[in-house]
Length: 254
Image 1: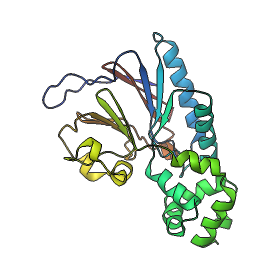
Image 2: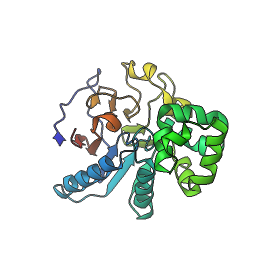
Image 3: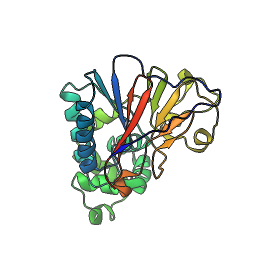
């Protein structure tokens, strides 16, 4: 599904932001364990790109590859295959990668929030069925993850950076703290922030492309673009395409 974008000017009527010359960028929102949708959207990106003039392509995943959906392990493996195949792809760390990595490294305190926010489904994709995990305490969960989650998966997710600037854009998982310089942002905000960021009406210095906060459709504002459309429950996984000062959106079907 190709969604037309209605251009909105920033409050100061500034020129439309540009991702820079001589490259095409696709950024994908929160996959959350839906490998079926991840594969579909990659196919749609390939078809979209085939209809455009040849340009170097950069693919960005905005974080939260894991949890909630049923196929977290498969999503991680597909992402690793993209990276190992020499694709020009960047992955950003979300709050769910943060929880997953901590629990998988044996942090007992991280196991409880990990389980509460979709980790049960992730554990099932690695072989621990929900009926089994329900009877285990947090220490047992952390020890199970140490023994059964492949270390290369954990290391891969843990290596993700927190932001990626490109031209007039900044790609992050959750957002940025208003009135703080972009180079002074802290990881907790970049992975977790919501209200203060979403409600801010002024420019951040760059156009922010983010996931983390679910909306029914693309949330395009004058200072930010949210592309988390709740794929794990809606079936709608969204990507933004960028070329110079143009942008468009691709989605899986509902």
